[in-house]
Structure formats: structure tokens, C-alpha cells
Length: 476
Image (tube, rainbow, N blue to C red; front, top):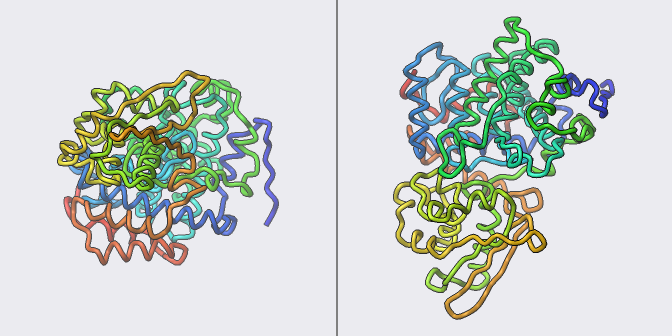
């Protein structure tokens, strides 16, 4: 195989990334990345299917697409039936974040929900796409998104610049995936990325104070836009070039920084940043709740605490995400919707302390009104710290009724590279999520999906996988 060379000076960065993403093969992927990609696919299928039965806005999105009609090209997970590929990607991408249980990557983005639903939608439309190609295209799309996120040199860029990285970068990662599966050549793929670039969006205003449905549906829009971009490029529509380094490209207009060009294009094909920074969620809530969850559950277990022992739980310091998820305290203690609860450190901390775990049932209507959890939430407060005392990761201080003050800060979070989620845990999580499907999925089907994804490189038609998760119900 010929050696590939790329610049790390910023010159031709866009075409270098496109050329790499467009040609990355299964055989070039390290075994560790192949395994991680398969886990990402299984995890995404699970959280997407589960949302169909748990998130009311999921049915709204499904019914919108069902009523629109169109060619039955690609499967809608959880609900069943088929829709045009771009609209199946819209529904499935939207469902992907509604439980806030999907995996998380650099900058707080959710790359799997921006790539995996697109991959299945495009693969079904094309027909008989094999598992090796599916692994390669998902890995390529995620690699592009991770590199762009890591190249941004502004501290806390998603907060300071006001972007949701899934929304902002998902169009580009999704366009790589759809374009690859549609067989686009290099020039067409460059056009697809340019068309996708013209759609970039995702302001954090969607999640200020009470979260809106737009917070959960971010990858629905990117998935629909990505498939459309690839479709238009295949028909000959052109898009702008130099979308990253250009005069009005990504870095000059969206994040307004001089990027780390080495992070963007260094080691293409040899270095895969996802292996160092990807994390699976072991709790179904915003990633910023993980440090407090981990510390509370550790302290609860280590000191054999029960809810009656607790006088107060104090969340100390942390980053801007910690503050966003902790204030205003009155709303965060009494969230009215599931997505608001998942975006609340006080409520989620109360669940962890009261129940000894954080599960999907905590965010159902019954869970939101659980008197034991609400009583505990009244004992959770957030305390910012002065800069000289603060730490990027919040600490948890538990005050007990017998006068003890117990402190812990957890940096090696469960599910993160230094403390990875086990295959057994991910399979159990998948089964739990699928059990909430809007249209019931037989346990044997769930087991078969796990088997097929675990051996994805041997599957000749990946469309068989999603069809096991979506019986012929509610066909658009």
C-alpha cells in the first residue's frame, strides 16, 4: 500500500482530511478501533431504540416523517416502517440523544449519533452494504469530527463560543459517512462536505435554563442534512472548497481561532484520537453529571450511607458545564421534563444518593415525581469556588447527620478510556434500552443484534440489523 502524506501546516487541510476520510479502509484500522467502533454502533442502536418509547418528542418526530410520506428506503428504529433515507436519519438521529445516554467525545460532542444513524440509513438505501465497510465509514466520520474538535485551541470552546459540537460538526462527519456509502469519488465527496458546511448550526441557546427539544434533536438535523448533502453531490451539485482553512472557513467564522494544525491532520491513518478520548455513558444523563454521580456513589458505598444519613450534598466548584447544570437551583431541583432532569446535577445527584444508582426509570414521569428523590434534591446545593481554589472537575462533599464531612473528587470516570465500560455492561445497557422500544422488540431479536454487531466484519448486509429492531409498524 502506498504511503499517504499530509501537511500539518494548514495548507490544503480540508482536502487532506477529505482524502483521508474518503479512502480509509477496514484493513487500515487498528484492532482496538475496530472493537470500539462496533461498541459505538451497538450502543447507539440501543439508546436510539429505547428513546422511541421513552421520549414524547420522539413520537412527534416520527409522526411528522410518517405523515410526510415518501419512498420507503430506510428503517425507523423503535417505531418501525421505512422512510426516505434522509428522513430516517432525521428521526433516528433525533432519537439518539433523547435519553442523553449516548457516548461522548472531545469537546462534549456526541459523534456516534451523528454518524451511526446516517450509516444505516444510507446503507439500507444503497442495499447490501457489508459490515467491514460500515465499520470503516463510521470510523472515518468519527475521526474527522474528533480531529476538528481537538484542533480548536479556545479553552471551553463550546461554552465560550456558544456551540453544541454535535450539531456543529455532525453535518461534516455525517456527510463523510453518507458520501462513502453512496460511492462518491474524491471530488464529489469534497462537494458533499462543502454542501454540509453550508448548513452548520447549533447554538447553545437551545439549552439555557430549561432545555428545549432542540437540545435532544441536534443529530436529527445533522443526519438529515448530511444525507441530503451526499445525495446532492452525487447529482452534481457543487459546494465550497477549503471549508476549514479558507478565508470564511470553519476556523475564521465559527470558532474564530488559529487551530492546532497538528491535531487536525497529524498522523492521519496512524493516530486515531478517539482511542484516547472516547467515553461510553454508564448513566442516562448529561456527561457533565458523571463526576458528581461517580463521587456520590463511591462515598455511598465506601461509607455504607443511606438517604436517612444525609444532611446535605454539596457540589464544589467545577467547570462552566457544572455551573450550567446546577443553576438556577430551584429549577434544577424540580425539573418538569425528562431532558431537564438529565441536564440537572442537583436532581441527578439526588437520584444517585437516594437510589444507589442512576437508571432510565429515574427520568420517567413517575421518577420525576418520586418523593424520596425530591426530598433529597432539596439537600443538594452547588457552591462555586474562587479561581485559586477551583478544580476543573467538581468535588462532592457529603455532610452527614452525625457530623461527618466526606469528600471525593473522581477524575477517572466510569466509561472513559482510563476506566472503560466492559462489553458485558454495554450489552446489558443495550438490552435495557431496547426493552423500552415503542414497538416491542423480541429478546431473541436483541440477542441476535448483539451477536451480529459483535461480529460485524462478517455481516454481508447491515440492513438486517436495524430491521431486527423495528417491526413493520407505522409505516410512513
